[in-house]
Image (cartoon, rainbow, N blue to C red; front, side, top):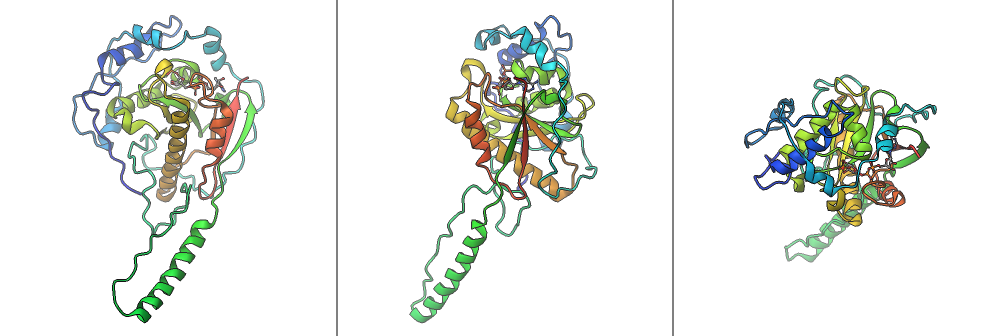
Length: 343
Ligand SMILES: Nc1ncnc2c1ncn2[C@@H]1O[C@H](COP(=O)(O)OP(=O)(O)OC[C@H]2O[C@H](OP(=O)(O)O)[C@H](O)[C@@H]2O)[C@@H](O)[C@H]1O
């Protein structure tokens, strides 16, 4: 598994621009009933942030902010939407299916460390590895290089050998890995059992200010600050199409939170539908690759995966299209997603 590297944000990035950050925080702070609005951590000086530094650096520090402009970008928050998302659901929590792959669940050495980062070489697996969990969308066809020697008989036998070898390789590639499966329920996603991973669609601007993201910001303030620091310290082009998995924090009902970066911006600036679908596919694949790495290292893993009908609200992407995109992704050992919708 290649090492994930963090790139410091370039000076031109959107997230670092004061007005973007101001925009984000003012919208939180202007919410009269929300006195826990997250205050932006002080901007760190631009240095090369190593993965370790990033984790240490995710502690918050105060700074005031205003985000008037963000209001013009997005639609008005609906009060009942904010109220309803935090309501406890009365419906029984669906039985959690047995984990589809035999993943060990023992205490990881650094639970508190948010994982994954933004290495774009998501699927750069070495050929020798037989990954327990890898996305395997297409079988690469092996390019045959003709031997350069003049002796035909020798080159024929070599060719036969190669043929055998490549056909056996193709056979193993052809073995279809199980596709991701999805079950749909009606209820409140936040009623998921402890140690579940809750996934939701995120923008790369450090904003969880509307829709289900706003409920996440209120219920999981520590996860929010990790997400915010991640956006602050990485370029949008490195974030889009990745997944940030944040382990349980001091607040947040012992849930893991998975941020699927499916759109660069929000509101009217959101990506087009096809881009969001492509970003979703890449982000889910990136999530699976990370889980595989944890599994190999025997780190603690989520016990189940829950998510809303991502992209189907403010991102305006029909759920059926997102669902099909996700269900087309295969991974070794399989992966089951519980999709919970409050409507
Ligand atoms: N408690 C609950 N339990 C279960 N399902 C719930 C629920 N609450 C709402 N839902 C449903 O969950 C689906 C997606 O709901 P959303 O529209 O929020 O998300 P989305 O993925 O379309 O869009 C992402 C952008 O929305 C935010 O916007 P900001 O940038 O902050 O402005 C983010 O930050 C992103 O940018 C809809 O079907 C809702 O009915």
